[in-house]
Length: 126
Image (cartoon, rainbow, N blue to C red; front, side, top):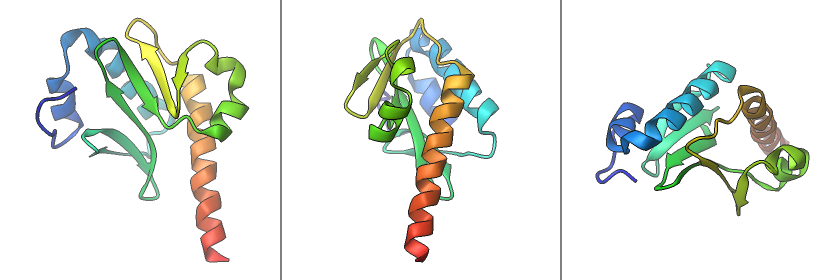
């Protein structure tokens, strides 16, 4: 959604329309609440949270919704009931600006993604 490439997350938020900021700010706050040790950065021109230098999740504002990435096969299987409340397209969770992803739900997604990253790291060491 931003017109020019943001240098940091604050730049990204300055560039999105006012109507999308409330939901996005709440999402960002909830991510920080449940995963304060996450490294917040910009990757592919959108806010990204890293864990051990790897992309844990990312989020972005669009015209009528905001999205959370990735919602992969493991997350879809583990959280299938909770995901029914939202629109999932491919590896993207789409959320209306009037909806808030609960911190408890984000915590589950983060836990799964951390496990995936840790598992891949452990397998590389073998």
